[in-house]
Structure formats: C-alpha cells, structure tokens
Image (cartoon, rainbow, N blue to C red; front, side, top):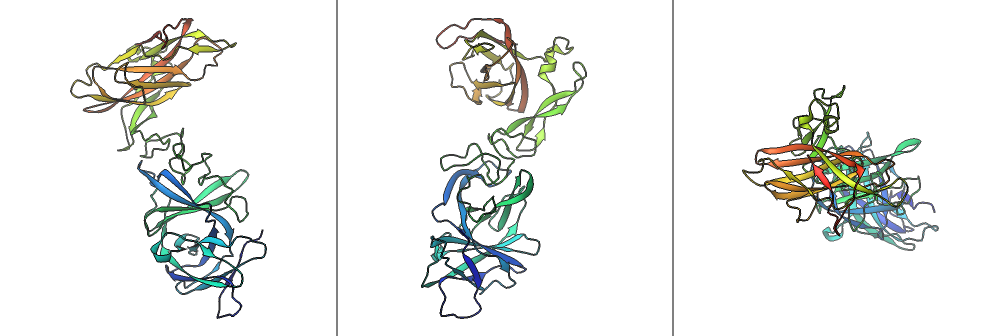
Length: 424
C-alpha cells in the first residue's frame, strides 16, 4: 500500500476531506518537516528503561510505531501553517497518531509536534472520506543531543543503526514531551512506510525489550547497553547489572614470563580505577616468582555420562573465604563482578545463606560457590577466574581467584553435593 497523500492547504476548499492539521508554536530556524502517522493499536509501554547513560534509575517509556508516512516538505514559519492529510483508496485505516518532526538546515531535530486534546498525551486523529476534521498540532521546541547525554524535557535524539553491507539508517527519534514521559518513535528499517512489524529493538543491538521486562537491554536507545556488554571505567553500566564496580584490564609489573597484564577494580560512581593487581592466572602459574599473590580455588569433579564431558560437583559451598580482619571495623559487602573461562560464581554471608552475586553483612568470612557452566570439556582440567570486590569501611578492594577443575577424578557425596572444593 502506498502512503497517505500529504498536501499543503493554500486556501479554503469545499472539496476537502481527511484531517486538516494546523501547527501551533514551534522554533525558529526550521528548514523542513515530515509527518509520521503511528499506529494507535501498536503503542507499547515498556518498564525499567534507563533514560540516562550515566544513571541506573529507570522508568516506563512509551513506544510509537510508524504505520504510514506522509510526504515531507520545506517550511520556514511554523505557527499557523496548515496541511491536509487526505484519505487514500488503497489504505483501509482511518485512525492514526500523528507526529510532526521539524529539522534545521543540518537535519537536526529542533521541534516535535503532536495532537494533545485537553492536555492529554499524543492522541489519534481521523482521516476519513466525505468529511474533514480539524486538529491543532502543538509544536514543542527541542534541542538534539548526542547519546552520551540524557534526553531532557527540551531534548531529542535520533537513533541511528548500522546496516550490514549498507549505510546506517535512522531507526527512530526519542524525546520527552510536556507531560514528562520519554517517547520513542520507531521508523521502518527496510525502506517501507510501516514499522509495526519491527521488533522492539530501537538501537538494533539484538536485544528485544518487552512489556514484561527490560532486563536484557536496560537502555534501548544506545546499542552499547545490553547484558554481556564490555564495560570500561566511564560511569556507564553498559552490561546492565547495576553493579557499582566492574573489573578492567591494566598494566602491572612483569610477574611471570613477559606478562604485564593485570586487573583492577573500577568504581563506576566516581569513574576511578584502583591499584593494578597481577593477573591471578599468571600469579598462580607453576613458574611464578610471586606465588604469595596466588589465590586459587580447586573444584573436584566426576566423569559425566557423555564422551568428553564432566559433571561438576554442585553446589560447591565448602569454601569459606577468610576476610583476614578487613571487616572487623564494620560488616563488609562482597560482590561478584566478573568471571572468565565459562565459570559461574556466587557468594553468601554464610554457607547456609542464600547465594547471589552480592552478599551483605560479611564479617570474619564469606561463602564462595563456583561451578563450571559449560560441562563439555575434552580434558579433565580447566581454568578460569572470578573477580570479587570486597567493600570495607575504607573503600573497595579487588580480589581475583584462580578457578581450576581438579586433575584427578573425584566423587561428590550428599544429596546437596558436599563438594570437594578447596580455596587457598
């Protein structure tokens, strides 16, 4: 189906039919505009979405999906400008939520208009034959921002997405209207006029948000935010875990061989990196000269039923890690901030407590549980690491543990798996 026809009203006409839109207000310096007709049946309210790259608080945002497009045009004066959206014989829909986007000469969004009857949010208009309905489109002045800033009450942002083998395309526009909520308008990705068949993945990172949860993609306007994303120490929680600390690579003094790789804890709140620690895998190497820095956990295992597989002993809760007096002045928190090598780790204040990524009220010791997530191992031994941040009364400290599957075949006993796991 072709788009609805969009024409400029130059005077009264007795044959008018459709929706007569009159623009009210708006910025100076506008060069062009376009009308996007969104589907009133495809409006989605998505909870738990972040609206600032430097914050972890979230809110419910509203998605509007383009159903039809009207022709764009040049314009200089907005206030009082009138356009007519005429019905088309090939289009069965008669109800649309209109959005009018205004651009300056550099194609930056400087105004957004919508139909707000009696101060309500964006509302539908009717485009019907044999009648003409009059609507006032209230235009708000906005300033287009880059994606390193939050979209404020007078801000807007165009979301661009890459396309395999082609030029990037404009996926949508984000702004905050006078009612205070963030609105996200999705545009088609395939050159058509219809975006209602697109999944709710505005930033095209492969993570689709839903009305039930946004946990996999906490910010659908910036592609660098999603579960599993790599973090750097810039204050952005790009992996969506809301953890105040993350682990970053750093350069340390040579510790074994020619390695100068280490790890350090990043405080995302202050965007500061702590002291660089020797890579624990290197520190625990047989030829290491700094074995005093070695922190190692060994988990025994039993052969699995399939060829080339092992069955990891779970739950592995034998290991109690001594805090060595670091939590004597006040209880500590212990947080799992990273794992490598296909391992999973969790902590608890005691071995009888519930295990999670964060343990509070830690005093003389805490329980560490580790397991090999992927059991498909060709050999008996496999190595990984777990990084823990212990926050004391004087601040956070990073502890890395080398994780190993034992080279020998062991036996796990007990209905809950009294696992042969030991930590040094």
